Length: 120
Image (cartoon, rainbow, N blue to C red; front, side, top):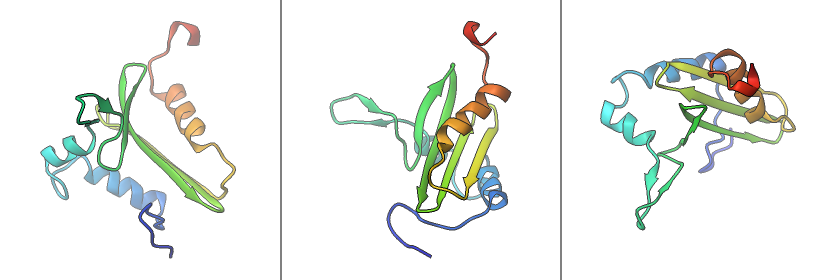
């Protein structure tokens, strides 16, 4: 197992789904800690940056999205949460040449996100 600051941990989609479920409860983190983790950081000049504590934080079609992706040679992953709706997409791929962000965002657009006029 590779150990480095970027993570490089091994997991399964089932274990990540269990972790996702814990992120909705006070079992591991308090409500305040979860909110802080998924809130855009405020910089010293007062502006914000779309990253919380370990998660990218933004909006897609008016829906709050919290996500992180990554990979190592031979592997790619994407963990996308829409916490206000309790919707999560976890994508693990045996390949490093796959655009997991596009796949996860495409799945969200097909099955969860409100359609735009262009999408009708």
